[in-house]
Picture 1 (cartoon, rainbow, N blue to C red):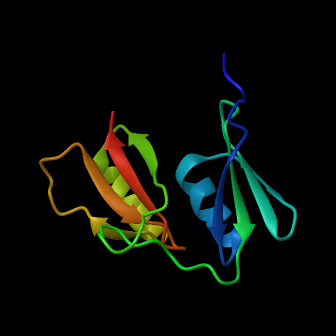
Picture 2 (cartoon, helix red, strand yellow):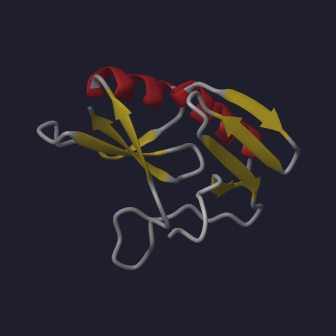
Length: 119
């Protein structure tokens, strides 16, 4: 028997509105701005939240000395099309050179790693 249910994944970042806007452009959904905390209500009932953290230090990926902290796997029908879109939205590639794999790794505008994964 589970003790709890997952409520929301929260990302610390310097600018919650900007990062919520990035993920809304990637995933869709509706932004609910509460100041230092911003919710992104996603289609299908899932949710991401963004919390202001003025001292936020982006995770390091890959690095034996630093932790990536967490990452999101985002499933897409076409890696090339999705890559173009996230780069135009402000993502930067971390490990996207190997075109033979079924995933590519990027950082969002606040530095959190995420993967685009072929479905």
